[in-house]
Length: 277
Image (cartoon, rainbow, N blue to C red; front, side, top):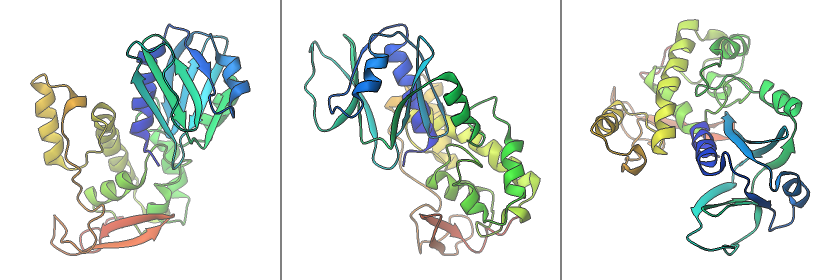
């Protein structure tokens, strides 16, 4: 399932492509025909995201809500002079103007919502590290009151919105936190450190389209951007500290990286140096 930075990046791309215009909105597959008719021809105001929820806001207080789920994709492509680009596969929703076509396939949710429905949906989410107005204390209150492990809690979107498995594994390792500790044992300072780290790392995911958690990789990317290189064009290595490194030596202490399934996803951690609460 895409992590939050992917949805924020997609929201920005949709806004850049369509804001201020009135693209045609159709449902080639037919399953979203009624919703598409409500949006077709209306002006796009902006795109936004909260955690793993994607929104495209139209004039008339109508909002397209999309949750990609495990298999959904929303792909933007240049039209290249084609008045009606061919449809490939089961396209639930298509946005089209004279420059860009955006095809949505396989989403878990695709709906047209009013303002109150959007507000209610967002209110059920935890704070989002990519939203400056988010309050980390809301997440801390739920962590501190829970007997579930911190590894489980970080995957709960009502605790922390937008964080997926890779960020979970990596940020716990970066702060030496034992993923098996219950939320009640996690210190407030540890939670704040996790929040601040995610707030610093995830914007780079939005800019580059890649999850970056290794400091040396982040420094290389920052240096390249500082010289004027486009963050989107950089070849960022898929290089992590513990994620998918079962049995390999920990990069910090040399102990073996461990693995087990937690909250339905593969958790990776070092049992030697990750002991912090």
